[in-house]
Length: 286
Image (cartoon, rainbow, N blue to C red):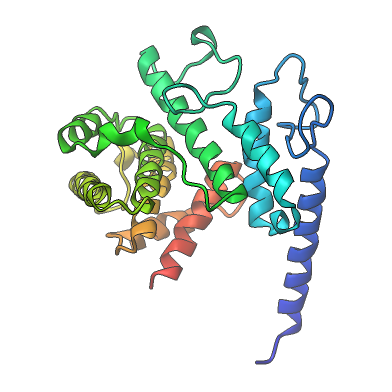
């Protein structure tokens, strides 16, 4: 195969960007009073005032290093030390929480119970991702998610999803789907069967509520503007369920058409990654 000069130049840019990213992540080491491998959320983090954000900095950093292939250089004792530090943030219920987060300091929904449900799912999914990167052979205990294996419970939970905020609900749904996928990996025949049933319920719910003209989920998206943008952002999370299960996604060409209609400029980290994911996901499955 002949490699074009432009391809070599692009690869060189990618390699240099990866090296800079790795150097930046290594500069975020919390060091004092914390195990090696624990990372700051950003260079300006006041660890004394906001120690809890070390959890977010660490699980984000670990997953980035994994994507860069840098964790291959970490010896076993270092991996175990960081994994144990992450596990120290686990509550008795099985979910992970950021130290110092209190009822009066969190908000995602008017109901406090809904706020905590969202945050617990989010923080737990990200922490489990970092733990998998550090010790892929270890199976996390996921008893907290077993109620969602009951079809009646799951259907009731889905009925309460508020698609006026599809971006938030996309996070709720993809986090649950990630937990279900981990449960399936346990290999217990009974659990595997119940997980398959849960995914069937999830797909049925999505099939009924997907907008054919866009491929997205969300109330008011046909008005365009921010509502359509947020429907796209939330739906990119939902799309991962199809990707993970190897299923054909309906109306994905409409979703790609919308993304390609947008001005090719920087918007935000979340939005830009969602737009790229929409198109690469489509390409990989055609």
